[in-house]
Image 1 (cartoon, rainbow, N blue to C red):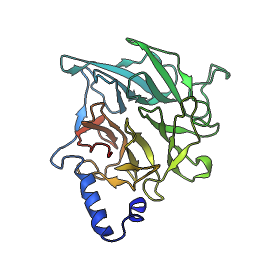
Image 2 (cartoon, one colour):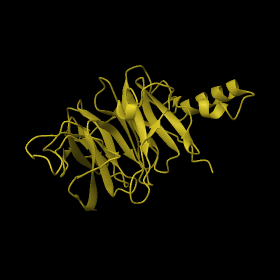
Image 3 (cartoon, helix red, strand yellow):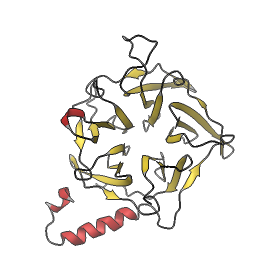
Image 4 (cartoon, rainbow, N blue to C red):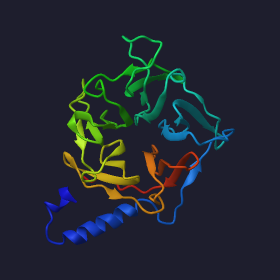
Length: 283
């Protein structure tokens, strides 16, 4: 608890224990994960990420290296179809903005100034803007400092303030897979800030809350939650054993209503979901 212990020395052990127990109660200990399924979709083995529109009636899913879309009607999710901006190149890791106006994803599609008959070497972040209905804009590549030539970016998420989190390996002189936070300044992004959320352990797939008061992330195959502390973040606290069961988790995502945690697990069929109770942002 590096960022908390410098403020609280007496009773620090009690504070650490209390916060650990509190974080584990975010997921009801009695709840068990279920598989998120769609009508007519029998093979869920390649599904890994879910990103919902704000009304929670449309969801974009990473199905292997294609982004597909499913819609809810009559209490059931339709068989997914390829999203209008995907299907030609390798695309995955969709992330929806809280207002539903922009979707960010990972792709190896070529840049506009590259030959259009082969993919680029690196996986970069791209975005599409929602026009209306099922119509989305042409994909747009994030320029530096978000994407940097020679490095791969994965696991994006975007807050209601426009800030972006993602993970990248060996970037900016930081060894291993690290999480990054890039603040939106209104007309540009600032320099990436490395997220040291679990000591020196690697960070994968950082999901940032719409109001930026927490980040859920993956480290050593487990899911953790970290809370904002001014301009910094608290040491990550591991979620409970009904989520972290030693089978290797990835791709955390919280539903727009804040009530469901979606995530993937090694060798599990498709995307898992479990009820969650997140505390509100402190004033």
